[in-house]
Length: 285
Image (tube, rainbow, N blue to C red):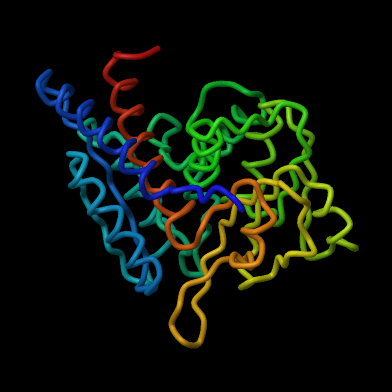
């Protein structure tokens, strides 16, 4: 029977420590601030943004939301980002994705200052991650790495298989795991014989957005299973990409959905905002 990884509890612990740090910064006259840009009215994005706002309130981070119309021009979006880059009261900038298809999200990410890029999507910060240099790491992969750290799950020499190659989760995770000396294999929609690959994984990380895709016969006995997927079933229930009930009998560690990776994503966003604030104020190198 697997140990159930409690991302909710771990995120509470991280946020409690960050609250203390935030209070200490405030005493010194430094007030951390996150600016969030949302374009259009995507229902999922509205939920995520609301959760980020609440997390900021809990930790003590100032929060400013910019709700832009769906028909905003690219130049106006870029102009706003440049304005926030220049605003010394803003320590972190987050552009909530997805954004409308008529806008170039890559140009927007490139425009966000690398010192305020608390989601780690600016190509320069991505490059630093690839080179194993100190940087801002994309929040979901960073949350997964914190889970490994908290639960003493050693990646050194382990076979890590990642299902999914998104820019937000899969690709940054490759380098996070490589930087911990894991042997990394990535599977995606064009991969053949996925089961042959996943059954050799010491650690399986699944981020593809397909409900209950990974079944018991696809995992190795005593492997570590990290489920990043969030899928809503017809009955309204939330489930992951992994068949949790069957696999928990076979794995050594497993994340539930909800309550696993999700809360860690927001906790690491808060962590990055505090880190950015301290760096911008000369409190860390």
